[in-house]
Image (cartoon, rainbow, N blue to C red; front, side, top):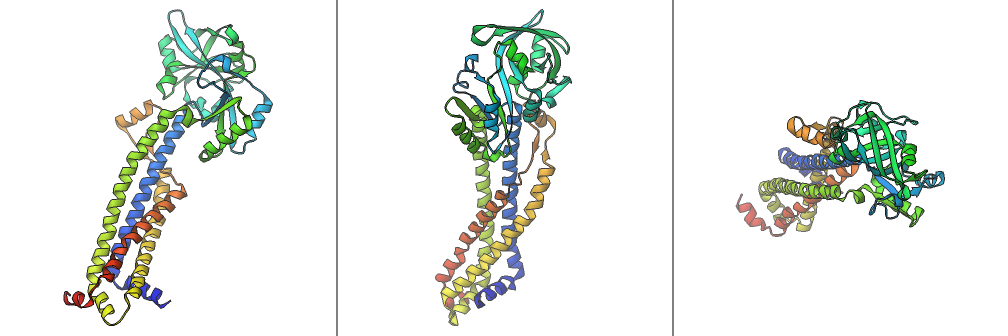
Length: 406
């Protein structure tokens, strides 16, 4: 017990030295926490933007549909199937879809279009489709009109309230055709979606393609996105081999690879930050040993065992590092929270580039508690490892020589 009290008193005997050491550790925790929270926040925001375009977090199809997206690979919609999916604890809601392609035509132009039959309210709940309306109105439950993407509208040379004709291949080789009025115009950040998307009510699409009560997919909204993969595995077990359950990572591997690449580059930056942190902490420990060399030599000379002196220095280092880590975590919490509520926002050409692809030009911070804990532990371990330097110096210490040099 006496050694703990002595270590605490020694720690504050030279307040300036202790303050410098604690400050080095404090800023290390603060910088690493803010950096990692911004990194995670940016990637979380990127995923949110990508998922809200169209795919959702999880989709369910008939087995083989994703590899061969044809109408032969549709499945029967049923309340029992929906109920089975919704019984999974992490599934909040689902939106049924019927997707196919058709030739869209006006008097002068013809272009290919991706026709998407939706339940307007359920679709809007998951992908916020209504927010993408730039002109006109959103679909209602019994609408026989359609929504068209801005790029497709320009390619066809049409405008709001114009009529277009759709012609395609229906279910089991039948002819799919129809004449529809444009009720609303959508703008997507994704160039592919913006150049070919066309939305209509689900029963209308099923009727046009001769596929009553058939669907190509269920798009799922989750309560907790962190449990996405676990939810997908659970649904695969529940639904059996007749259905495929795919996460957005499986449907969009290029985005997953982009995030992995960006994270790898961020890890390099974080490692460089930790190296700077190590130099900062080591510099203060080196300064401490120079200042206390005479004191330590004298303690050994008057009979204090080196092992007890090592325990004393370990406790001093432990108190100093823990104090710096706790202060760093406590101060970083309001800073990270502020950056979450008021994210870094870009302007100018950089912001325009982001917005063209449907991404918000912002860098929000993540308030995940694991970030604070992990960074505190990492810096704590770095500090404790570097604290072995004074211990090595004590073991090699010659008390007479150390006192002579002073």
